[in-house]
Length: 410
Image (cartoon, helix red, strand yellow):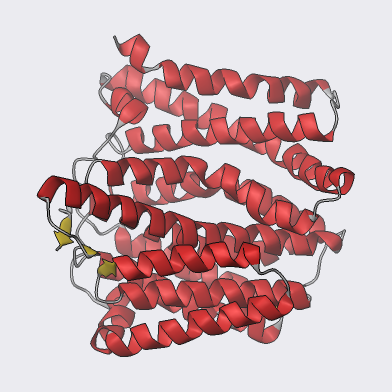
């Protein structure tokens, strides 16, 4: 029975093998085939990481768990984006790709991820209660994470304002991320809520569980690190061969591959009626992106031979501004720790509109729309602004997310 439940893990491990053979044999199958095989390896390894990271919560608690799980959760995405930033140090063309991957993953996470899990969570709640459900309600401990995201989203406007990501800003964001880890590490560990293969791993006896989880960590990390460079190269090559905008491929296809496991885990939580946990997972990831990921880019750029600031062109500035205003709307809508249905549909609709209305003017118009709606939400939730900004610095104990109980407001 256990072997049968572990089949998804075996399948994902098998799907990574063609990419490993190509990588270590030096064979070059062509851009399209290479993109598919290395992309498939990244997705499969991401699932292995996600399952192992969840199961690891059985054995690791406190600050160590927070630090390890935070880094593991973002490894697939960061491996690709940091490669772009590192390469940009010697090839300025790659600056655009680093910016594209970062902004794409951010907007995908909030515009598609947040809205989808909320709508699923509300639909599940309506089915269970038989009553119309208007909003998803989060427990008060989430205000700490929301406060970190609020501050990071405000700081993010420095990037389009200055047209660069400086090394000083990078170290400041990394320091803020370390503070975030320290803050959430003070939570009392609770029983993790595991589903699927993660639950199977977590249910094993101690020694086999630890050996298998550690093996999955190491194997998946090797696959991702081995696949990141050829995946990025083939992604750009495919754009060139097929006449597709390479910037858009890097912005949307690569993040979609690396974010897929996280999205699926969040959706599974929502389908089980745990929309609170689903949003909490994606909220934490958003904090990681605006602090750890953005802060790491100029450092990777320096190590790659670049200067002390990763300078952006007009297109990249627009993308960062659009991403920052979208994040501001997400924070503003959630200030009362209530995620209303209208906010989910608005975020999803505006995310879709950007594909129908490309171009500089359209991006600035969308920035304005995000900003106006965010301002209205800020005014409506104005009494929650200061408590949210102060939440990361309060001494009040921060309860563990694993013990939170979901509430839905009808």
